[in-house]
Image (cartoon, rainbow, N blue to C red; front, side):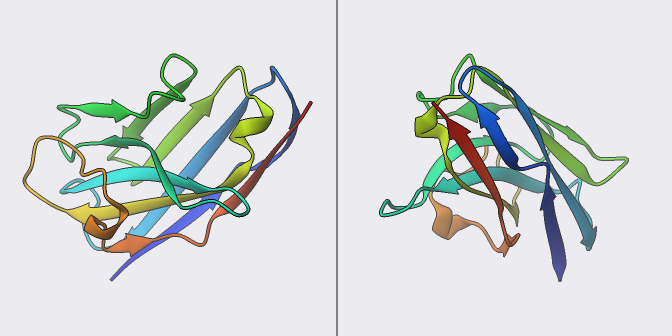
Length: 126
């Protein structure tokens, strides 16, 4: 099993920044693609950003491209999501997810991911 624990969410004004962390424990982290998904009230879960197990590719949703930056530190079994220029539309519960894969890119469908964290709330006020 792999456990994922998110942290770093909170309330921020529009234009502000937050840094989310996803710490993993259990099985090997370095052989897994990892991603962030978010779900706003009344909306479906959506892919935000993902990174391949070997960091070969990082894929961003168009809505966050240029504002969010994903990184991973395999030595610390942790990935980070730096979110800048936050807007009210970014308000959601953010969840990290992981899947063991040999693909050089992260899957986009949420159903492709095996392990999930509980989520952290991000609220952006206007």
